[in-house]
Length: 135
Image (tube, rainbow, N blue to C red; front, side, top):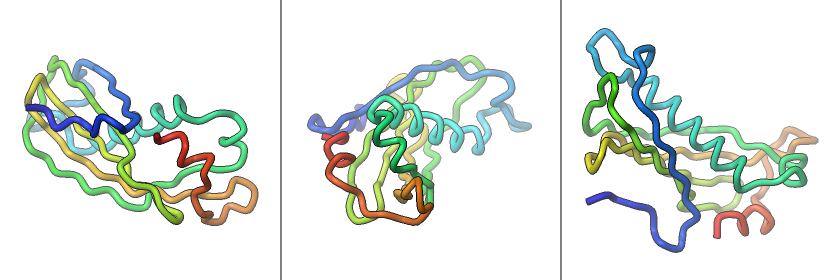
């Protein structure tokens, strides 16, 4: 059974087929590719949630990645990547990403992002305008 995000969470998913350039010498998806998928879906979800006003005031930087590799993916596999924000407080936000092949959980990732003020380039507290996006 899939470990989906909580029902009251704003989530996003995307499907893709594993391509040849994502395969390593062991003939499975390279670990760096999984991290790239985590980053890509995080940025896409933020782009969907955010708007020009918020983007002119803030940007995010990743400060920690935790990745559990559970199973392997291979060339031609149909992959679904899910993401949601599970926690936001202070200057940090926790984003979860789960990667599936069918009903098989391949990867669980948790990334800690830090909010940066776009004008000062210093860390800044997460304001209500951003918290509202995750509800």
